[in-house]
Image (tube, rainbow, N blue to C red; front, side, top):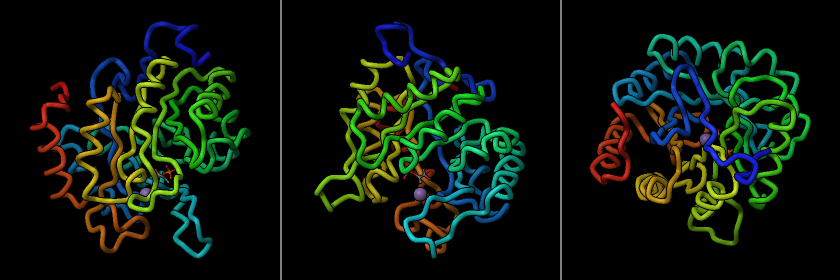
Length: 266
Ligand code: PEP
Ligand code: MN
């Protein structure tokens, strides 16, 4: 079902009145974790100012250590919804438990399935059983074929509104947090009809690489880019080293536009 051979036309996913995958270049931005209403509201206002329509934020955080901040749960989803509604944005948030999908669809416009859960087949099936759009991230060490099969799980349950996100893979290279597999973008565009995003934050883990990798993503044909933004990254409860503050986000957008590689429609 994901194959370009079965469907030649690009899938266009409608999110809150916005069409993703129709050739417009999109940005998804927001904090790693939802920490408070004030935090999310500050980021949402910055997105609105820049014409970015998709607000991300983690409420259920799949942390490597059980002692790290685990997220605010449903309360975090409520905060996202409230801030997004105030600023006219769509909400994207990761869900980790299949049993939370029916609750989550009351708050989110897009269900994110994170890298660590790309092969959580019960979660894929649960996300496939609703019609809320899904942003599926590539597993930490998943091949492109495994990634496409994970998407197939969702489509096979009836949900056609799937978007893919390359977010870097595990390699021996230590200079970046993961290795951004940029060639996955044109491969996924050729092999599937689904919109393809690149997460520049988690793939690189480096603030200084967000702009060049975002340019590369758009240059190579990505439908969109995801990046993390926090009002005060130094005190962030997760991913403090790589989130942009709001001034850096404004600069990121203006440099992307200047590059001519990112041409958002008015
Ligand atoms: C995230 O986007 O919040 C996240 C945890 O990313 P990933 O699943 O790609 O590690
Ligand atoms: Mn993060």
